[in-house]
Amino acid sequence: MTDTLTAPAPQTKDVLTLRQPDDWHVHLRDGDMLNFCADYTARQFARAIVMPNLVPPITTEAMAAAYRDRILAALPEGRVFEPLMTAYLTDTIDPEEIARGFKSGVLTACKLYPANATTNSAHGVSDVKKIYGVLEKMQEIDMPLLVHGEVVSADIDIFDREAIFLEQILGPVIQAFPRLRVVLEHITTEDSVRFVEDGPDTIAATITAHHLRIDRNDMLVGGIRPHAYCLPVAKRRRHREALRAAAVSGNPKFFLGTDSAPHQRKDKESACGCAGIFSAPNAMESYAKTFEEMGALERLEGFASEFGPRFYQLPLNEGTITLRRRPQAIPDTLTVPGIEIVPFHAGEDVGWVFEG
Ligand code: DOR
Ligand code: ZN
Picture 1 (cartoon, protein in one colour):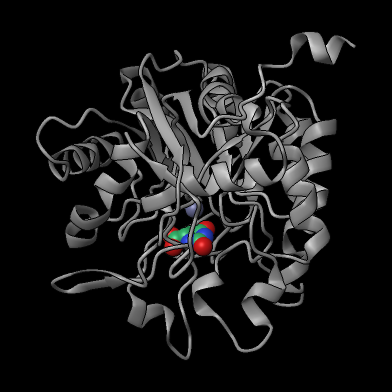
Picture 2 (cartoon, rainbow, N blue to C red):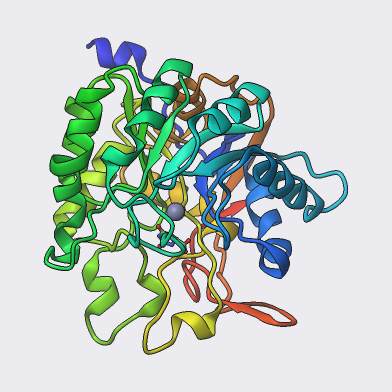
């Protein structure tokens, strides 16, 4: 009964008008790739948490400020977009540097990559105990920690790496730093859904558009599909179902983060293909398709536009966007001279169009 009274009005229309969303986890790269991909994110999202896994990684306030300027310079004239910058935690990063960057407003959060967990994570943290001093500082200044939640030991099966991370690393971190705000990024398992649901209010999670749609069969049945390969890797169907239920639940601990991560087609269609799915061009359409399938379009706005700012303690966006239910054939590839990328949903009809 209470639910019916408090639930937002059902969205049954063919036109969805939402408060402008933010992307709480994206890879915008650098150089030519940045110039190619940045505006796909900026046209749909007002703000985005920008991942720092460049080569070399973003580890100082000055590097983050310079990267932010390059992102803004890559956008077309007149585009309004706010990149929210992050620092890449290493074993030796200076807590005072992080604190200065946060205080000046250049840095919004820090990212924990366990060393060698994913793309450009070689400089990541080899043992979380080594950064306990940094976490202490972050807790003190109330700076969010963003976590790539996978253990990396060679003897742990890739499909188990997220669940074991919760037990071995994240559980103890949360216990040791009870006031530290933590975002468990791009969750892929039912275990993570439960961990976040059952955890304190200091912990939240982002969910990608692709993990709401693909499971490991989509990657491996009938031939190996490198464009469905990302990290954390998609798991079995029941995990995808748990993610879908969490995303549409209206629980503010779960919010949008695309983890859009472009790689050249040749680097993905290779004997050792890169991890990452480029979902930025049609991210909101993809989420709308999933929420529609779940009969929960009225919950999309909370997930995409309200719960993230609430967790990050930032104001809600004032503007709106429009999505129209209409066939939209996604191209097989996106190409400019020197770059060819296969986007998420390539060759499919996503069923919605982002109208701006
Ligand atoms: O699939 C992924 N791609 N997962 C990550 O964690 C990193 C990202 C990238 O940078 O390519
Ligand atoms: Zn990522």
